[in-house]
Length: 352
View 1 (cartoon, rainbow, N blue to C red):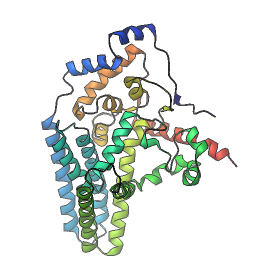
View 2: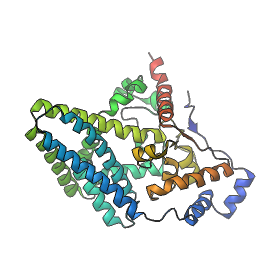
View 3: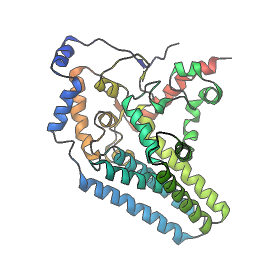
């Protein structure tokens, strides 16, 4: 059975054909965004935002040392899970050059935040995320929908073997429990990637990763008893993983997939596979601007505070073109993602 949410190429309307004769649909949107001044750097915003995250991290570390060998440290673990999530969002913005226009300061900041503070390889994640942006929800080219453990289309389900086949039967129910392991999974894949030919600075990245875990485990097992240290790690890493998943899963999971051979222009490839999440200032802060996923995919280097204004322009322009533009609330986005996961796993549940 074909995946009911696989995109197929459609023929352009007469109006769209005339617009393309003058230039691509995306070039017109890009002109409107540029004219609105939404691609300018926002140094004050990032100074305040990154400063607040740095203060939160310092406060968490100070509270950790002040409490000593106490079960109250689990409260610190919860707080630091949120701080680590915000550090991940900061690394994301640095990788996309939303903060600095030049490559070197962006990479330096990314290595500091991702490798040293988070224990995640900046180079590995950058490579993977770049491929995702180029081909979102593409069954063959997007690493974020590769069937490593979960399956994202019925085609993948029909070909699944081993662990993906076993988990895929009940992946909707297992999704959030699996997210508790996402932080550890990122670190594991980071160390694994150090041997990859695509890694530009394996020694530097490896050194920073080791330094992170020496500080992390050293601090925990020096100050806390083994039982409390293990409990801290479990709570911190589990909630960190769930936070990351809650930020990234609503963006594309449950949106149409692209099969090999389907041709879509840049604008439609990015808009049709992405979902925006409504919710105001709290969701903006919680998701670090990634709730404007459509605009982020269209303009990856756009600073976070400009995305809200870009959303209005982009939605109106898509309406002019007749291109479906999807946004919903946070809980609804998760329901859509889980419903999709359950649907694509149906062939595995029916198989005997």
